[in-house]
Length: 249
Image (cartoon, rainbow, N blue to C red):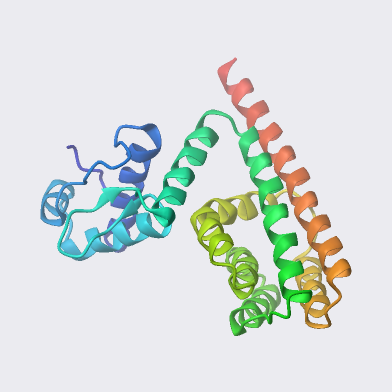
């Protein structure tokens, strides 16, 4: 195994994680296949075992591997939670061959998040503290013009809403797609001219409507927000395709 040359000492774990992610998504590492030991990875990549552990944590958060205490880390998994992790890898592999699948992800996201609104407004559920914290983080990022921080808080807002619904199947499914959804939010946020102020106001309105049990109003806003993101995503895909076609000429 040839180690990847890191860009900086403080990002060694990102280099390791990126290399293994690429191998998993390309199929070079198959589902159920064990990874080398932490010591072997550390030696091959000339990094510390701490960097390896941090890299494996990133991969596990993305649903690409399963770490077992006292055992080897393996590519995705085989129980209910692990099955969804396997599904995530499959979806990522589809995206690597056809970006149109990203648009289909937005449709799935809309289904999940509008259902979450129903669970919160009709089922007597309550938003947990993480929703409000994410909204506040978005406000802070808006005020400081922190685009990257805003995107992260935006994704965290939607994740916290799903967690608040109390449906474990939806939670597991969404958690496994969370990395992909965050990437899509980052892509789509760069396309429109909508300000961070307007984007924050949309989320604040959704929050207020859920809190007041206005389910239909909250669902309409959620659908519009995700549908707009899907439209922005299509623009981004078309621009990327045009740029690639131009470079190939």
